[in-house]
Length: 479
Image (cartoon, rainbow, N blue to C red; front, side, top):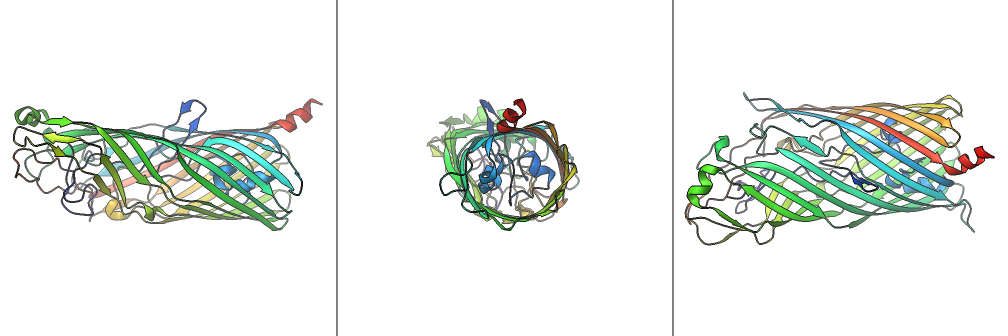
């Protein structure tokens, strides 16, 4: 008894004539791998990665000053001379609750989620006709919440029970300063990820939500290396003003693994349900990302920046599970029934965020403090809101600072709180997914129950820490 079959197109499940499993949050979730350790990522991305950027409200595209410039705008690497290393880690807490009309409130039960990052660069300085040339390597990715967990029998179970995601961007960058005022760079990236998630699938004889008729569906997939890139340019029309523009083209994420189900005991035995095969592909589209920033230096102690970031999530119409030769039979349906492509209708929209932030040198050479604000529109239409990922309209405020520990070594901290707008869903397209009927060759599946109506609330807190090392400064301090 495998998966489900919502009957109307546009439901958060399946088109007519297909079966479905798993209400997966898009693996649009990018996160990262650090050294030999994996970091888990998930869902729709939340802004951003990197302590300096988080402390400045994500306004970091004009002239990024550490190794994570490879993610925001690689042109910023061109002015970074000598050997530099950035070690960064963020800890995020996602709060998300769902209350159906007249029903039980459920909440995400997972705790903090660690997001590390690593970047190393070497700036050669002037090379022939170039004013600067820099190379960099690193592993990073857009931050996200990599795990969610809800009650097995909660009202959200037809959308999601548990998820555990990972996606890594292995990066190599080159950047050059052509003139005093113009720099450009490119980051070549290889994306690799995995996803595990589970949800309930309705397997009963009629319209209902009785847990005794639930099947448990599980998906576990991983991808090969997928190429993408970030292109960036920075200009300084006048010395105090820096302008930056970067672009990451959208790409398609395709992973391969297994799709398994556990039918309800009261049906599996009497119907002698048999499932042959478990191989599946998993597909989700990632958005184009455009960053535009303007930074202005107000004297020796003040710096302000304003950015606009556009994410073309309208590329993500559906999330697809593509079974590879999985078939189902039963005592009432002995002919092997192939499991067709499983389509989750999402119909996402483009999202735009406006960011402003700045730095203040409180103690020259010793302490810099920063703050920022961000407003982001939602990529998820109200009718598609569910517990699988809570990235709706948000406002974020942040604080941070950098301390010089000794020559060549700095430590930075940041904290950000994201205020997510409450979602009151009265017209939901998120419906219960339905197992294919295997009782007789001519039986039909019941109409699915709408399960997405209700009130959704959420919040996000991020604490971040980084260490910056400049080897040339360390050498100079020894002499």
